[in-house]
Length: 175
Image (tube, rainbow, N blue to C red; front, side, top):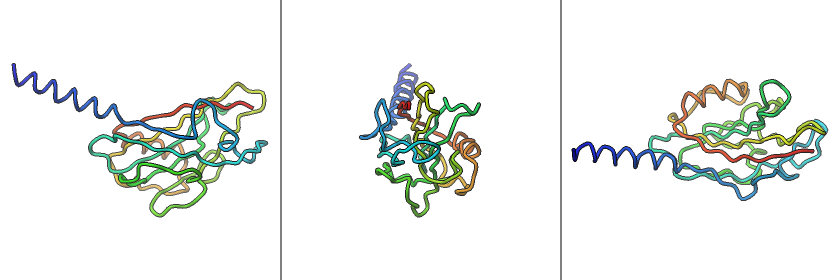
């Protein structure tokens, strides 16, 4: 009986720790601003990626990945605005405008804009407010073995196959 109680407490504590994995931002909340809007495709934003930070990654985390995805894009498959991976396990933040620069060992692969790095919000004019899902993934591998020219759906496949935990922030934008 004592052994079963110990195992129950141990596994409950493990689950609670994993659930503490949290993504935060000082610049992203319920609505995106002009700084996070794309500059192109008819939009005239500043295309600056927001600051992001995370804490309480689960045991066994070897690297991180971050994506920004719009499931409301009228493509039938959504729109990838940022795909970044091979972030070392000791790096727990991306500063403002991180998506505009290259960083040694960290890969920013293609977005649906056909470019690498951060591509801000740009929903069709008059469309409903689109959701922008910022997600950090704790991964069980140091490197995904992909490069900056990899299609975002393929990167997503690899990320999902190596995810230990994930946390998201949801924001909206309409023009």
